[in-house]
Length: 310
Image (cartoon, rainbow, N blue to C red; front, side):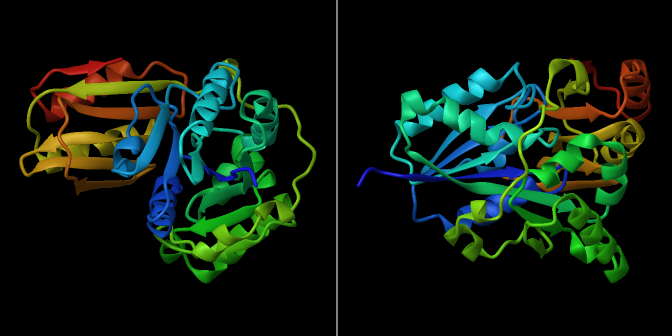
């Protein structure tokens, strides 16, 4: 019997917990040879550093969505390359701004080069319980992520009350009446979900994809050299939260290297065992208005080091 590689797509809006969910699933699959395609909207890969370890084949695709025409061919090339490796499972983590409705078409289109080696098991969408309702009312991509997923995971349940959870579930049900809904915290998902084919929960017919260069938000890369104080960094990050969907990266503090993770006003700075050449932050903006001067002014209020913005 020909070899089959189970494939799962993990989707969900910026900061919902996709990488944490993926890390938890990798713990279950640690006895298998794993392939990961990691997609980030910023120009520098951050999350790949968090999951990369021995025994994992990792392809990082940055600077846009893998479902956008600007990167779809790169994504297809990555899938073709992975098909020739000895991996036993493939996990794809899409950008938080991706519309995943084109996933099955891409797998179909590459079959002349890969054969039917890929066994697409379904799309898992992770939702931030604290912000989903508000985001879904203003951003169509968050609704498409729900509509075109086979399993919905409501994350950060520990941060909201039962009334809020019920409202989130009702909102999800109005968009996707079929997919199972799981409630959790810290991106935990029972591994038995990987033992079934989630495509048993059918999706609606595909519609036009939202991912195109014209509607992509602006992203900035912030770079600085030196060693920084935690409280000053925290103050600087808070000053960005009003106009940023997402802030993430690595910064060198007095106590060593730290991972920075910001969603709206919730910002965490946690120690991490890595070494980087310089401190870097990827900032995904809510606005298309110029903000570089605002960022530079805030930086100078907190630090004397030079900040480079790309």
